Length: 112
Length: 113
Image 1 (cartoon, rainbow over the protein chains, first blue to last red):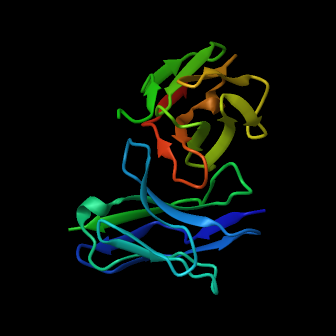
Image 2 (image 1 turned 30 degrees about the vertical axis):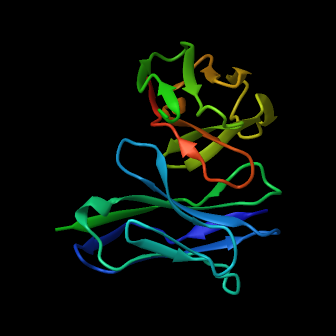
């Protein structure tokens, strides 16, 4: 079935470091891809999305490009801040699925 | 828009008691989802509704769990009787049709002692 696999954490970086969190997907249809962020004590919030191949989603300095040839949707940010410390979830949804499939989540800690 | 509203935010109950979690989706959203999040198992889909009708409850762990959506603006998740292993954060999410992203509530942290 449709699924996403994301890199295991935790990831610890220093402030202003470059961030990459890998995500790959398996889908029988043509999925839309998402990144969600969960801050401590809160629910998941949509960070960015891409609905077709080669689309780039971006928000708050984060970017991810929908790569059909590598079935990937890696999350990147050029310079992380302490406030980016959170758990990040990759997810996919297709018209064939009525639900969204989430990855296991990657915990990011950014140290000053 | 107040977003997806869940209540209570925190619930502590004794083993064997009945627990009811509540969710108000965003107005106009026609799909509603209940998730459970634990450190060991991550985010698990329990059940979801389309237009107030339960579509897939295969994620409901046991008969002790039940969910209802009597109208488009309200859903409940009930656990009866509760057990310590039910301790988790329970999230409700809603969305419109198509492949739009979900909007999550802030969750209910349930502790069964």
